[in-house]
Image (tube, rainbow, N blue to C red; front, top):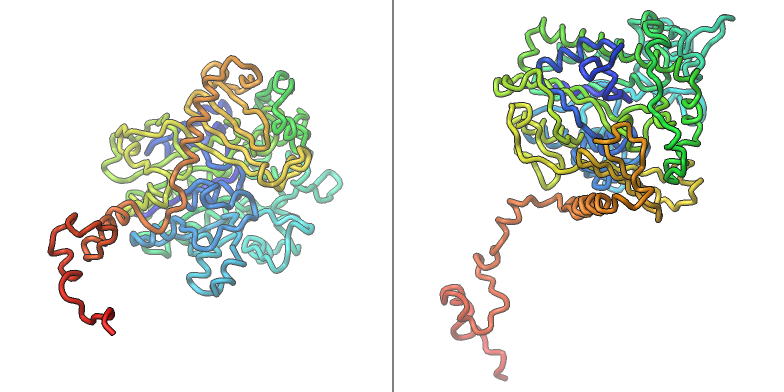
Length: 547
């Protein structure tokens, strides 16, 4: 069996028709949901691109692997799903984005060259690379560089787009009424069509690369197909740019009570530039239709992949996973982007089609269990026929749910957010070690703990599903707060760093010294059978006490 692990960047859990969106029809996402299981309570372990993806790729929590933020290197030696899958006999390939930054200092210290097989895998988050392009090739000191070449940009140049950086000038920019470039970085341009042929835009390009991979590679393989969209810039080519309009934009899910004495971290985020932009209704009216158009294009390209798998008779042998690295506030809760722990940010779509006969009874169902993104890595290892290294992988295989079973399951989900590099941390006067947030969610109550001496936040999603009312502002729910802190403390005591010895290894080591006849701490030797001390009794070989 092969595995097609498809990740969309910044795709909200509720922007699919199978999840109940009233206007956005996504028949191909729905098609996979009808073939498999849609998990309705899937949570990422960090609501930011880099940190979340490293959790997916390692099967470990952010505080276990340490790469919390975009640009934080994943340390050399951290095992990834590629390491686990290759041990099980399955290749592991990347097609698209990882947001991975190599631990160059660690590689140099160990003498690992990036052009060696081991070094390349260390530099690419454990994947062999079919093609990598992380997108977001903006101009400026933090953007596009010649030495940081984009295969997609090279493709566009080969198609005749006349620019050093056609990603920015064509694929993510429109044309205004005066014939000038209208960059997708500016929200007022979101309703314009991207100045690129639709078949040359990013999502179809990566789909074509995936089809090439499927046709050329023999299995068994796991292919991580990682799309940059519907992540900003919010601009999409025709005909998707005007498929949706203001009548398809829902009212923002926000309430004035949220701005009344907010938690200091929440308040700082409500005042940042992206939040200020999305608090303007004219921004939402332009951005959300473009966001929906980007998702509609993603759905159409997913249809291309599904059709190709069917036409080549490979669908029956390919597990398909659809998910995202985090969501997008889109103005809900007075915020834009992601970062905090409201459902719009930390909850993601997760749909899995398992072609095995054991999964037949669960096809077309939903599962409400608390699922974490780190559950995919052990799921893949099990599907590959390997043994799950549960002393390293901190998630749990989803196979029982896929096969219609009801296993004993986790009581709570965890997510972490390190915002130490952000302006919000500076505004709050925090040292980097204190600019950290933790979420613990038991399926009803959601607690956010903030380091730095702040109070927590608490929401009851049963009585307040919109997460408007922070119950921790008063004292009435102290019992729930303490109970959730107990869960967080239990999680904090997990064995996360003993990764070189498994439980079985340790059990096999017990009593090993006695079996070898090395017997320390005996009072007179009578505590053990006589044969075990035979070598240590009798006449000495040499009597050093005599002169």
